[in-house]
Image (cartoon, rainbow, N blue to C red):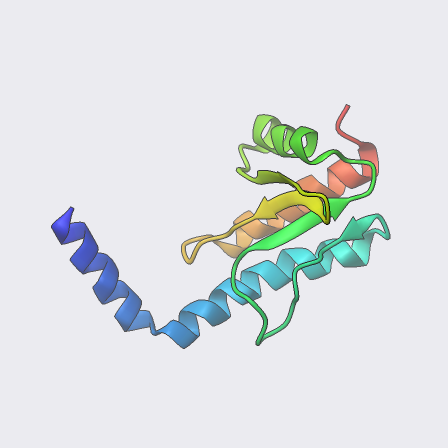
Length: 121
């Protein structure tokens, strides 16, 4: 564990905080902006942009219950999301990591687009 922590700290320092956060925002904005452009049913209440937040984003789709949508993404595509249901907002939390590849984000975009277009039933 100690070796893993020192390697992780060295990696973090090597990348630098600014580059790491920029990468995470890029990945978040890639899926969020693509899905917002594809359907009026999509909501992303997370602030987007180069100086807003980090990796985490909330995706809400009118007509798709968060738990069902999250389960469908896992069952069909092995995409891990977290359903969030709160009195003020609901959706699925999307949380890429620094290691998430652009291809994986594009797979998520395609899967979510399919769910929006065809449903999950």
